[in-house]
Structures are given as structure tokens and as C-alpha cells.
Image (cartoon, rainbow, N blue to C red; front, top):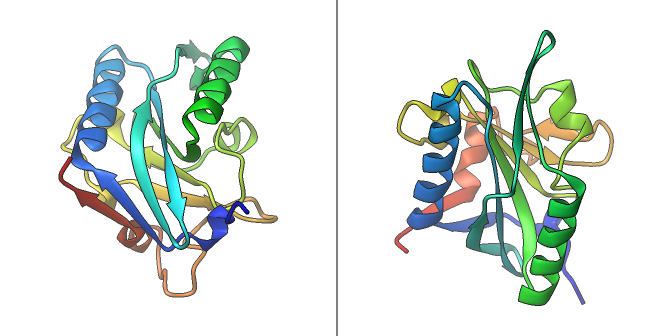
Length: 170
């Protein structure tokens, strides 16, 4: 029986996953574009162990309405097959914004991580600075109103949500 992501209260996150994610976001940011990465792993009760970062094929979009990052349908299919064959679950989507971190309407509507309890992490300033959860906006998918900062009672702010992520060597 698969346990719901809503049960997750602790996430182990290898430093190598953080470094690879940040390097990708910073590289796309240097081109003036938003970047995206996905964190997948296995859940053991209330603990989720991130096993890998997936850097999807993506296209940065710059228009009069702002910036966005798009992942084509065939790539989403490839990712889903990979997750299934590897027996991994998608826990989080991570993407960068050009300035401050927030969850835009586009982020709400076109999320890739769509299971209740999944996380969306928005990294500010095109990931120019060293990675820190304290500088990110962290949201969790809940029943309406959908993406919500700080969904657990002890979370007093979006920044406090970062305490669920434990960066470990690896």
C-alpha cells in the first residue's frame, strides 16, 4: 500500500542532489531564463529519501508577459516511465525566478508535481547565490487552495517549512 505524500514530515536530501540542482538553475539563470529540476526518491512512512535529481528537457520562455519554463509532453512521459521503472516517486519540483521567490499563477496551474503533499520550491534571483532553503519560497500541494505555504501547524512562515528538508552527505 502506497503511503500518501501528505504523511511526509522529514526529507533526506543528498548534498550532491542540491549541488546538481543549483548548478542547473544557476546555468539557466546566467542565460536570463528560469530553470526546473525534479526531486524523486522513496518514501518510508513519514520519511522521504531523495535518491535523484531529474533535470528534464526544458525550454525557457521569455515574452511580454514574463518568463516561464516549459517541459514538453514527450519528456513528461519519459519521466513518468523512468519513475515507474525505477520505483521512485516524485516529491518536489524546484525552479528559479529572476527576482524574489513566490509561487506564480503559472506555477500553480502548470505544476509537474501533482500528488497531494508534493513540494514546490522556488529559488530566487536565478540561483545566483549559494543554495539555502531560507531564501527560497517553499509550498506544499494541499486540497483547495492547492499550493499553500506552511501547511503543517508548526510552520509559522514559508521559511520555516525548510525545516522538513535535511541535507545529508551523498
